[in-house]
Image (cartoon, rainbow, N blue to C red; front, side):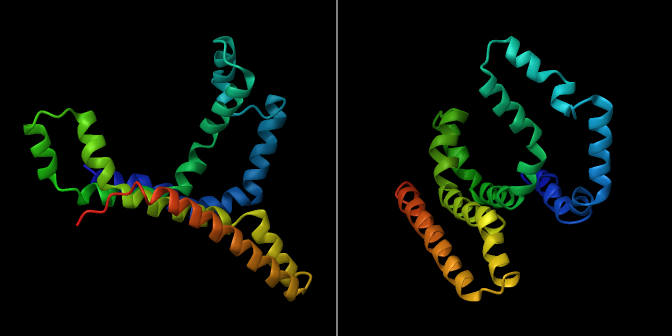
Length: 192
């Protein structure tokens, strides 16, 4: 079953790295957004067109929660395109779990819920740690601080300051990774 999800789960990553990224960064996308905001009087997004915001506010949710939910829904493509590698790692991990473990659990009378928490989750524990480390490192690659370090070096030609900034940034990321790995690796199950 995991084979059928490999392609569709990685497709946004492929699209985001090529033509779609150039279109999103180019003049075509900006002109489409400008014309949409001019015609709708404020740039109504797809979420507002579906009136999800109004529906959630009328149901009694606070505006902060509604804004968070609609923001998450409107960023689904971005979230999926940033998590393609992690999805592939999880799919490979799910395929590596022996079906005989599930068969034995089923014979013993376990439910699907119990099989997930007693077999699947512990077996992909090392992959959760791997994906967490990958995600933390990936999130720091293209943020504002990295751009500031590069700009300091190659626009201001202040290589000493840039090197000092990059070493401090590296120390902060390394400390964050060390704390995260130390906390989570205690709970990871490694099969012999």
